[in-house]
Length: 419
Picture 1 (cartoon, rainbow, N blue to C red):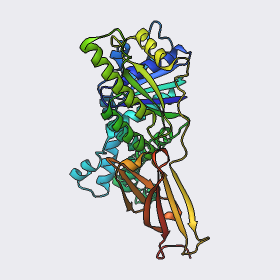
Picture 2: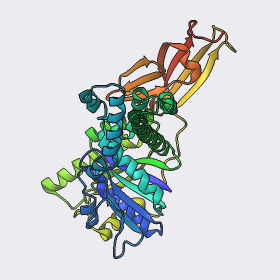
Picture 3: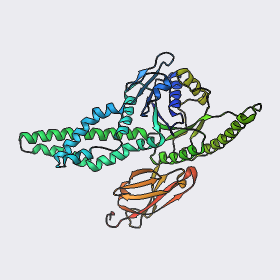
Picture 4: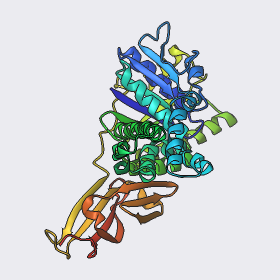
């Protein structure tokens, strides 16, 4: 099964291209689910179908194509409300003030997280060979894709796993009724927390698996969009999420020689400007994204037939799921000096960040994690065990464009280093 997440700056046509790709996949004989996590829910408009949160097969010539949109309000009122209640009970049992407990159980980005976990659930329970996801705009999508890792860290700080594991010790309490009820409530809360931690781990594993999941960026040939795309490619690389290609939408055709006057002049100028931007897009750093072209249509493509024609013009005879090859791992650690447990040892953490030379980078050591911030994007990188006993002494960028690496040098901390 392949999962393709379509995203792009607002208004570039990502919903249309996600729908078109899904239609073409279904026509090729693959059972395909197209699902929207975008709160705007324009997927049904593109497909000219009434959709809800349950996948339904589209009628007519769209056999094999299923569609749905995620309703986060339903998810908030369902499983999350129960989990939040368990968390409040757990905090209250630990002596936390009721108002403070309410604040602590409001996890940041929970709506977006629920949307992603529902996508994963739908992807795994259905017979799909391909799942196409119509995501929100790029900035929101980037934050959304970083949530599983961020919230896992948040959950571990708030309710450490080793504390959750000792809940059985409470069974030795005196046999009072109130004590038994407290143990029962605690068991329910811990079971809910373990379930959330497991779902977060599974979701993160799906997102960073290049063989199963990839991002397809939709852009328009405009300089401001190209600039944002450059930043997004670096940000996705930081989160170890594969970008398998770009689709440049609304590309104008060349003006025929017979077209004169203001209209002809405008079309030639816009065509020249778009071609210059397309040349920039081809050279963008990243995982070697494949650039495909979607020409400007005379009418907005809605409905299965129009979407199929659009997809065929973009992909031709190529497989729609084919894209750039997976990039090397984002993180790697190597020893650069010393051997064994010598205090003179030196290690280097290399972080592959194509395009990072265009933006300021901030680094901060927070416990056993390294916070890497590029622009508005931050990732908390869990340090390997050997680096947790070291201090970061320097950092530098090496390479350029596609081959840029951030290299952080670590040396043993004598206070905690193995002797």
